[in-house]
Image 1 (spheres, rainbow, N blue to C red):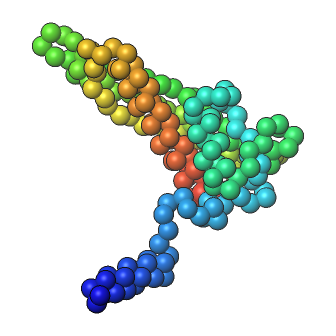
Image 2 (cartoon, helix red, strand yellow):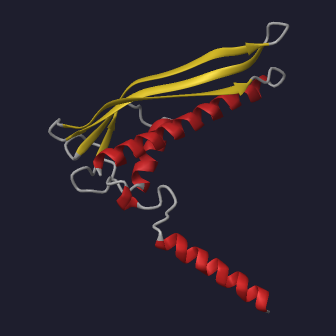
Image 3 (tube, helix red, strand yellow):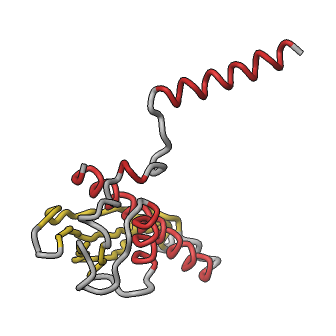
Length: 171
């Protein structure tokens, strides 16, 4: 019975120490982002077509950070302008037969945040991410799905970086 009590006390003590030092999982507190403030919400996203993966991902992350998403220009307190979005794929390595073994995918975009009067709250910044993946020539359909999955992961990471930069600049 004594070892179970010691383990329980150790877990409790660890939890108290982590909480006491201010430890929080990344993205677990909406107050840390500053995106819920009334001067920024609702935020309108410009430059991305409706129903694209990147737009949905950005909207979800902004909502989770405490921001409201505004659909029309008149109601928006601020505008997140996305521009210069670029996707690229290049051959990285080939085998002895000249067939592609690895590809490198890259996603890039620029973004800026302005208030309802057009004043710049966050100047234009560019994010570029790259990732490699191995081509599955035998499974052509699987290779296309893998490329799409890698692109979606890049868009998730870009969304995270946009939110972190907004948060850092608006504190």
